Length: 391
Image (cartoon, rainbow, N blue to C red; front, top):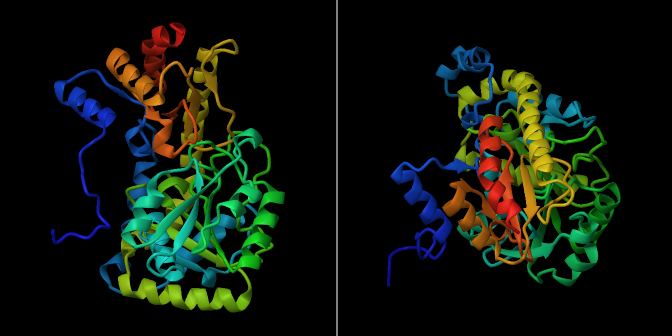
């Protein structure tokens, strides 16, 4: 018997891909990392002076705790979302240190130990880790690939866990880049309200749409069910090191008010968001459109290069997508996706993520970050040309 909780992993041994990548880095191999998710490490120009000057507020020298977050920071978040036509009451917004922490608060708010959260498949793999840390189970529902990775309520209902307390939706999905459809949103609200389920929508990548087509935010009504929308500075302002996330609470008034009261109690127990970051957030959100434009320009440039490189006749298929920072390609199924990823690494020194990392239900998908500098991304494609053309 060990003194450690089963909420932490039984083993920390890296998988074959991670172990090989680490060995190559340590040997000094010219590795190109197409799993990069940190925009501050991608050679993108930031307005450095403006970002740093926002941290010089003398109020940072005083400790004035506010469980829901500093009023001016919550007002700035509400003003930011007004850009998309959402008129939010700052009183319905709570600040956390990150969206990961916001998930933990919501799991604690909604679930008793052993309850379940319904999460989409494929999607970012953080949900299981966060749920386990809060003694909550994850039950997955698949997105419909044949419909462009849209929500399929019939399948969700068929797979609904008897102890489910909430449904998570990611808008746009990471990594498939598919946005919420208006008719799906209304039906999901009805579905959840009838069953007493809450809805949690992660919109951290919402602003990174690849076309001018209108995008539906979960902040838009109707909110028939208790609804939580998550975002934060990490993606919205491209500042993952400035730890600040937020939760907007919507839904029928009695439920919404009780949820806000209980969340404020949880937040008061942690008081996690630092004063300098909260005070700087209004200025950083003013800078966000500039930073987003530079990140989006990088993402679209690399995606165009990838699309041109593969070409329409290639046996490698670039999946259609509408937003985010990731491209997904479907590889010929002569190898499993992990075999392809290892081959990329061994033969070309290019690191990508196999689809099972995101829980794709079938083979063979590879996920590539679109954040690296264009010259580095182009070099990776050049190195991979022989593999692409060998099929």
